[in-house]
Amino acid sequence: MVSSAQPIRMLDVILAKRSGKKHSRDEIKFLIDGVMDRSIPDYQLSSWLMAVCWRGMELDECAWLTDAMCHSGQVLDLSDVGPLVGDKHSTGGVGDKTTLVFVPLLCAAGIPMAKLSGRGLGHTGGTIDKLEAIPGFKVDISIEHFIEQVKKIGMAIAGQTAELAPADGHLYAMRDVTGTVESIPLIAASIVSKKMAAGTNLIILDVKCGKGAFMDTEEKAVSLAKTMAAVGRKLNRPVLAVVTDMEQPLGMAVGHTTEVIEAIETLKGRGPHDLIELCMELGSLALVQAGKAKDVAEAVKKLQDLISSGEALKTFGTLISAQGGDARVLDNYSLMPTAKMQKEFLMPATIICDGQEKSLSGKQAKQWIGNLDGKKVAEACKIMGAGRAKKGDPIDLAVGVVLKAKVGDAVEVGQSLATVHCQSEEQYKQATAKLIEAYTFSGSPVLKSTLIKASIT
Ligand code: URA
Image (cartoon, rainbow, N blue to C red):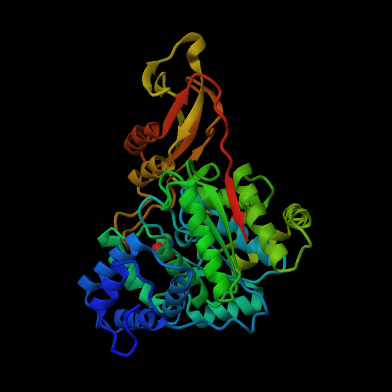
């Protein structure tokens, strides 16, 4: 802590953190004020960010930082909506279409949902881009419209606005180019401040771990989830978090139209088991926390009933119509952008098996999928135009990959591993050359990994 009798100087703040000292609330306020009025130059900010990366922050400091970032811009007031308004956030995953299922499901269960989402950048897809596969669906609605819609129909999903927690925008951009993204207190403050500024008070977080996730190990992901839950507690906002595996894509579909179809199928009760499991886990935590179910078993039953009765699907239709979209897509997927070709990707005879290249024949033709790298699957989609190289790039919503088998499944040479939704033969060739890199195989059975690693309430 810097002596409080003197005006605070950025150099002293950096030196204090460099030597592992705890900041005072005033110092944190000074920092965020300085970020906002640009009185702290970027070189000092980056030096402080690096010091935080190495030295960390105590819980108090992280909560003060979160609060100051939240109040650096507009803070939405959703108190008219009801005592509890939910929001769900994922730290980014391949094939993660959970929001499309979760928002209508929870709304149907009586929890209003106000969800601000981002576009995809890098290898992870964005919910906002996926929703644009639904003809007419408007994601760029004003804050006033967003609040009005939550009041009227109990849910809205819109694009993130720069007016909420603007200090995070600048800090995040600095972190991105100074190697300081991977700091648990900085990630926690960044995520929770934006959620708080959005006015929600039941924050449900899905922290991904594994290859391609911010947190590459379960230990780091659990630590991030616990930090966010603790920061939420300090700031009187319940934060529920689950840590989930991202060693392979979530569900079977990766892309935009392909993922919307999978989300709709899930709302019809025909979804892939891992996506259903995740929605049930997140949803039951939320229902119990909100007092809508007495325990997890009752909550799961309630959520399953909402799916089997068609209520959750109908609620998604209400959301689509409210945001100008064509709700007929629920029954007619061809209304969404559709790729010219759908070609099967067959398991080749030459593969990487138990770490070595192997040409399979005869009895060896049966193998087990050992790894399925989500990042490579996303890269294959990106080659076909589904991803951006930089913010604002146009994307092709029609292309994608629908997997037929995942880790632990037995497959044979010549069997379809995935359906590739592509626009040309050339695209198919390029995408599948990348797709095969996603797989490693094993000559003996492989255990299926567990999706949910931890739940923090
Ligand atoms: N997502 C965010 O919003 N912020 C981070 O710092 C990391 C992931």
